[in-house]
Image 1 (cartoon, rainbow, N blue to C red):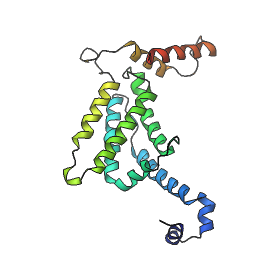
Image 2 (image 1 turned 180 degrees about the vertical axis):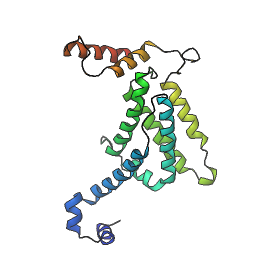
Image 3 (image 1 turned 90 degrees about the vertical axis):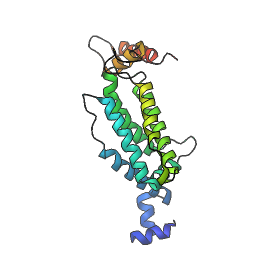
Image 4 (image 1 turned 135 degrees about the horizontal axis):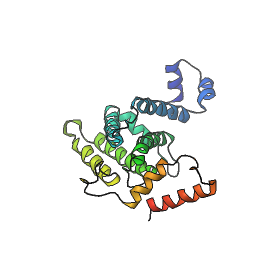
Amino acid sequence: MSTRAICDRAGVSAPTLYHHFGSKEQLIDAVVSHGLREFLDSVDEPPADDPVAHVREAWDLHVQFGLENPSFYALVYGRTRPGRPCAVVADLRAMVLKALEPAARHGRLRVTPEDAAAQIVAAGSGVALALIAQPPESRDLSLSTQVRDAILESLTTSPDSRRSKRPPTMATAAVGLAAALSGTPEGFSDTEAALLRDWLQRLADPG
């Protein structure tokens, strides 16, 4: 689309567009950001009783959003450039991170919330793009369910460790304690608190 066509549709002059957005590319970035943020705002706050279930629901809503808005979704990820993090995708990761923090505090994460969010966003967007590429009449939605359950199984623990196939580990405990810390713990100096967080990070990610 040309700048002239955009201005004609909006009923403004080119200088007006450049005044507000700087360039056509920045205008498109703003449109993409607005659309994805509307989706992010539609996702409910994570419930306290089962934060992992909320992540599962958010995954399904994300994939559904991509399938209902395929051209828009492809535009979001089609604008990715080497070495240039996408601000819109960063917003999506921030939403997933917010949903994962209660799971970490409950001792339900095997990795840090940041690592889990990065893996979930990468896997979820890959699934959505793969399904968009399939003909609608033969689209296999079970792909999303299978990948979702596999990645959540690898990143989280069961709420009842006695029934879990993979019992909690030292890394899980370290992730939970790190998530529970806010500010400087009582009786600790700032230096001691920083050292504690460093130790917990190393325990959570021994590799």
